[in-house]
Length: 199
Image (cartoon, rainbow, N blue to C red; front, side, top):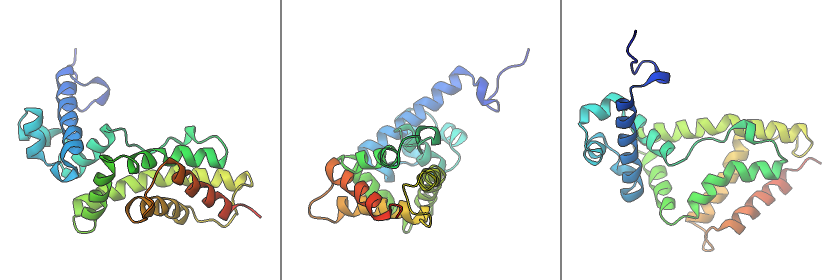
């Protein structure tokens, strides 16, 4: 009889699973309380009441740690299987998390911090790039489906389309005097659809 090891993710030792859960739970709490800059191996080890070595064992780099903390807060890319409605429904599903976070007074500053730090910190830039990369495939699927259904013009560029919508939402939250709420977010999506509809 073989003993389950951490090299087989389907058969993790329950103690290992508990440790990982404690570490990432502590990281997510730190993120919410003190922002992404607080996510270091030392801080997370202290908060989780485990050794630094234990944190490094499960999350070897700070990129791994930050990324896992963000995912623990429910921030993952939409599944293509969930993008089965019409274009407008799919856009609402796709951007739902971003809109909710930008409208939240605790999470919106964290996004601003992540974006600012990514300009000069390679760790934050790597996490940003991974997150955007994860979104690219389902968004491309969304756009391809809308083009095939005759809802969008055929020459639309998916990466520019995502930048246009996300950029509009970020501008409204951080720069526009009106700010961002659910109604304004819906108007951003409506205007994107109207501006890029198939002719």
